[in-house]
Length: 444
Image (cartoon, rainbow, N blue to C red; front, side, top):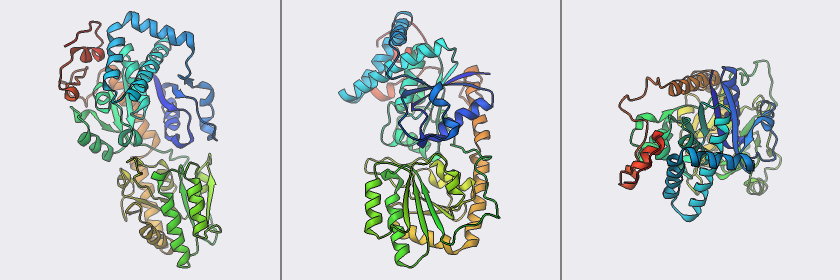
């Protein structure tokens, strides 16, 4: 059908299950997907459906020396305008000397990726995350002529955006995972044609994450479950403080927090300070979250903005819980209200408000009817908007239209190249020609 290259920072990765499940589904629907990763994966457990990627993924860094230099020489000689023009583009848009080193490295990785893609007959390059991976994809596309697209999520928009407006202009298919992200980008970056930026929602496998059987029984103590990396933006410290309030009020419960990360010592200290050792447990990273969701009575994701402005997009674990008809509680951060609609598909509270969180948890613990109603509506919402098969089919069809040049949703007056004059105030012909695929480099 089509040969697609997927490029990410680290692959496979336990906290980014949505990437390898999207790849698996694309393959199931007939696409040939080659996986590339800038860095090698961390030492961490992986789900069974991700382990095969360890052997088949091509890692760009450190590069294979002969292949790396062959790619540099090839494109510098055969497409000098694209090669040197793209290098200059990256250099000039780096805001600091430290960033210049990073941007040049992304350029070199991109040329290396372009060389490998040309060798393997790749027809389209897709990057997950709009920072490093999409910089590499944009460079690869510029020097090779292979079209590219990307999906932006959260950290790559709010705390580490790299040439985001240029990427939206240059990409055939610039995507983001929520309407909130799309509105934020349009309001905060000089995007010349907002219609090009589309929403492609993260999705879950509804056949795998099925509602629990009604015959299943739970322990006497209601189980509050949270799953995610132990980092500040997940807000787990507020869940622990809410649990302290519940314990003080005599509420019977257990709380499991599944995940690993740098916040573990602080969370463990908060558990000890609240004398919650017999109620709250940090269970570490787990490869299969479904077995925990099957036992949960309430799922909590108390997301916040961290000190650097980073935030979650829409946590995949929320979707998985809703798919299994576990009632959810989260915060009105970022795109989460598009998924968790208050009093309909779940409960929403203000971020960093452990009193409100304790009240919401208590409400679900004591109100079985509300739990059932929210759980049923949550599953229905996932079936409509976050079905992996349907959303991946939409993505694949969009990619096919872009590669064939038959994108009905595109403005026919929109040029293939882009003009970065909105950033610098100057019309530089060489910048346009880099992405137009010409060989003549002109300087305005």
